[in-house]
Amino acid sequence: MRDCLFCKIVKKEIKADIVYEDDEIIGFNDINPQAPVHILVVPKKHIEDLTKIEKDDVRVMGRIMEVIKDIAKEKHLESGFRVVVNTKESAGQSVFHLHFHILSQRRFHWPPG
Image (cartoon, helix red, strand yellow):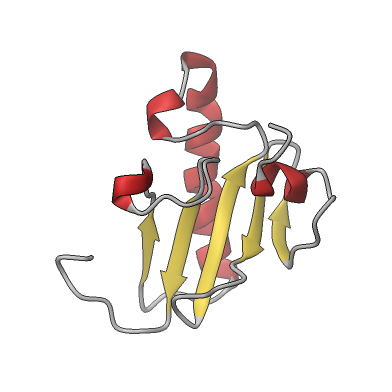
């Protein structure tokens, strides 16, 4: 996607504070953090949102969960963290490239929102 912010980060056209990267996944600190720890984990392949995941994407979705676990361990988030995926504009998605928010080190409430 030519105008996708996260695709530009993946291509290194836009700088980001990267905390994790491999061939399929990138993780970076959010530029507008909503918690003391706010990391975005993004598949490098452009997938608009959860509803656009295809069968070929299922493996990388599992890898993303593993990466989230590893980042949480590396960042010492043993006391807890929240993972958020907003899907579609009405749910708060503002960048239309699937991404997972890791939020930690503040008190969260339930229900969210």
